[in-house]
Length: 123
Image (tube, rainbow, N blue to C red; front, side):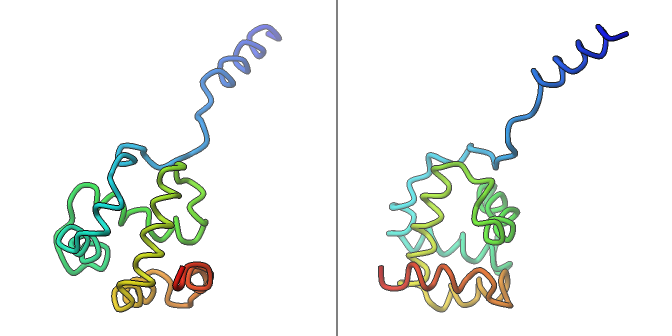
């Protein structure tokens, strides 16, 4: 019986799931290209604001946005963390009206957005 329990424990350790992360399927998206082209950027913004159609990657982004803001992107890959910082900085400094709408929808109590605004405003 001891042998069986030890075997079960070893199997559980061997097949333990890695830390829960968001999919890395979209990590290769060129964030700089997206931010430099409003024709590409605005549909993503409209998607997360429920004002337009969502592409598959837009739906993925939208499904994790609130949790990522709340948890400082804890489940994000390194590429996602880097891209998130770029996007937030861009929205704060170049699309303040859209940033305000996103904050109103996903952080109405300004629990998380203030930190981003202090860190990224005009930087």
